[in-house]
Length: 204
Image (cartoon, rainbow, N blue to C red; front, side):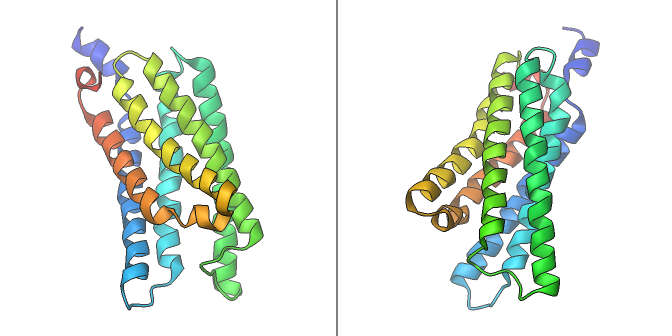
């Protein structure tokens, strides 16, 4: 394969950069959650919310940037993934506005989220599960991107567990699993970013 062909088949560097950014901020979010749990320091939940929103926003943009790479060989899956990513983005924006208004003009956000915020979170998680699932399957159908496809299933598994636990034991209990799942998601985002920066032939 010529260098020109390899270059043309490489995803844009923004894919890798956005996933790396998402991974770093998701791990920062995890660290904040752990500090709140194990430290005597009274860290506001807002310190955990901001990096989480940043990480998830970056991951949504990363998926949208990945669209052109998978669309030629899996157009329907790529389009579905992009569509659900946009739905997740809309829910995330509304949730972020809710958190900002509550924090600045209200009594602040608590460890027990309000019903409206919980519903937005649920919509976001379902949309993200479907978006990552579509992109993961699409990557399995694209030559030299199978590893990327498998890594995209890590967030799917994490969010699915949270949703299932939420359905069985209450949504608040499901959301509390972010203490563990966000670390897995953060590591997966970093791995995806690193893989996207690797030469094409190493992604098989």
